[in-house]
Image 1 (tube, rainbow, N blue to C red):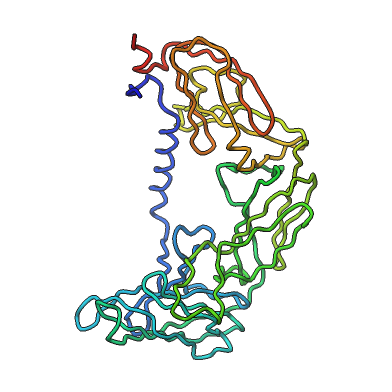
Image 2 (cartoon, rainbow, N blue to C red; image 1 turned 90 degrees about the vertical axis):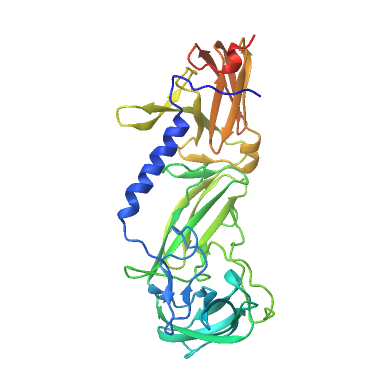
Length: 386
């Protein structure tokens, strides 16, 4: 173990973090949707507890958006309210809709906090009220408190979906993506009535080539009318996403849904040839910004880098977990007093005393060797030790 000293070269990783923070701060002027709808009696706020694409926690659209006919939706409530001039906790007692032909209660989960919810099925277009009854007290039983909310449904016209970004998919590629054996991608779908975004899940039917891809079970656990009433509800999850995994057979397919949207994707076998590039992240002080540059040798500016792999058609290759776990960046020749490689997400960082040598990179069954020449400037307290 040793204590690092500040170097005379900015750390690209820190600059990336501060640039992202700056972008977040500039977005504060945008209109924020809380996703919570006050009850008609003013006792609770109602919200959809699941996370939809682009949401961070629960649905930010909430019940300001109509529910897609044919879909399911969860309704949860803030479980603290006032009773007898005191803040009390509440347990769900019952829930029902005025018109079950529009919205049918298909399951109820009794409990406190996120385990208090009602699952509804949207059957036809219209509006109806959902009434809930709770028992509230410091112990969760006692004073009955009721509230209601008006919910609207709409017949959807179409859906769209996009590829979810991940450490393996850090930027768009106009030529598309290829999946290594057992590698996965996730698509995030949105459902619309014309230009109006709708909420609701368990609606989309996905179509794809089953000889090339495997569709993974969704995160959302479905409650059924047979769910024991006093059992905890399954934890809320990310909905309207679908993960696909490559089966290790070379080919190309198009993923679609019965409501529209399509994305082309290729799959690779273990023997398919690929190309690998080492991409260094450098700090551009004029912007300021981080620029990515392909390199064939390591210099003091190039010790923060990632590995980009493409297939023979130029598509980005998505690695499997095994590909990532088995990747190696190691010094095979050199006279460094200290040499260390660390990995965070998709990037690698080299820390070294002054010296020169050869670095070998092993990734997805490929190997590459790059010379490295680190002159004084990337120093460290360990470099000065006798």
